[in-house]
Length: 308
Image (cartoon, rainbow, N blue to C red; front, top):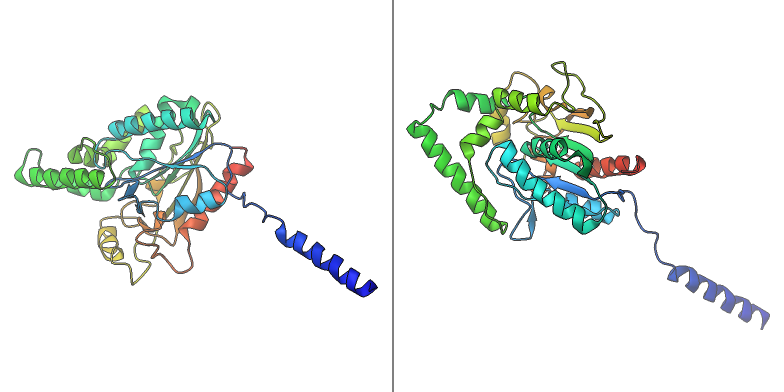
């Protein structure tokens, strides 16, 4: 009888332990929402199912983060894209009630988030750029040098790019004005130099150094990028990435040079990633031993540790 009672007590205790809820994963639970900003020809989500930041938003949310994915004109100047992003940031701040956001921008989106932080620093806790051409992209300079203003070739390029942007916008449920030639000029060395003169915060003073770690109102500045244009034989996008890498005189991710990607505290500038791998594209076909989702997750945990 005594053994039977003991067995029953142990069984009830075991059931009680099993019934305890699993501990919540809070690795990425930052104080302020994380806002993801896409690059040129980007989108938030196509048909609501295919994300630009492929699997990254959901992975961050699984760790406790509040994540918003924004959408701006696919092809336009940094100021126009930045204004579109700013309107969404204001809305996010109002809806979340948190007062600030952590901005993370990929490619041209890295310039967009810098713009928002410059014109409304009170809304921004941190700025992180991923594979962004802060000192221009060699491919943009090549295209500008070989497209005569007002020429037939330029008009054709603008027509197709602007229509592509419109289609991408429609597929993601939004429409925005497009200006492909303006976008190309914005990403050239002269275009980014003019932008940096107006909004210099976080830009290194040397050709390949680190920028200021913090802004005037305490915002944290970070960047990372890759330098391997070809990472996966099964990813069809790697082949054009490899071809475009030959336009660059320095190590690059296929579209952005290593030193050009430097902004604020450079966390790393030589990941085994190409430009699309940096946002886990295409379909997560990236280098076998480098997981972009892990890089984003670790960065969110970094922000969390800083109380951001």
